[in-house]
Length: 113
Length: 113
Image (tube, rainbow over all chains, first blue to last red; front, top):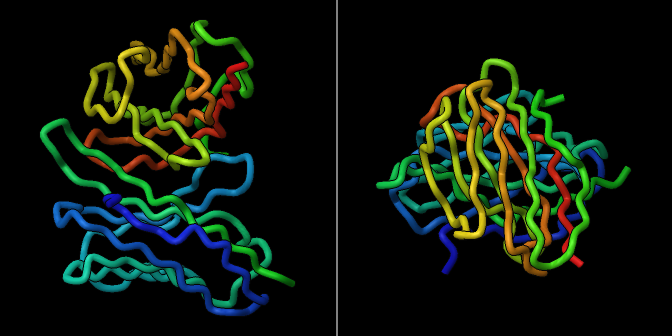
């Protein structure tokens, strides 16, 4: 079982829809939770970062963490064609070898105009 | 623009060869991370350096090595290359040592023939 599970999709939605992207994890030692966006032929871009259970909002994006269920989500409101990309969840824990960030496989999102 | 520069963008070489990938972190960032991204494995953490010192190690093969120089640029050396080493190699940087990778470069695409 992978430490971080993420449905690779693809997920196709019409413009203006609310998008929900999810990840589950197995290791309760994860302390920090992130979402990255990766456009084709580009490096990942950090979108959201949180370390506590609950919601964090930034513009059209909301990150949600439920530590009791080991489940994180990213919601995108009023989705736009420019949101079409691969979204990667990531989690950081502190181990014997230092801080390590584990990425999910990424979900490909297509927003149709 | 993330401010992280990776060179070269593309590299084609043969099995058994050795290559060096270079990364210049975003100005002001002291940490450099190296990741390997392949279709079947996703984004895999290799190694992190902070201000010239190794800080965390991931699934880095013994054939691979890295270092961070006094000017904070980093190099990833890959030797005795195998077909399975073909992948995108990303460098990322961040300000602190115990944090998530914040700024990613656009990667070096390595193809082994």
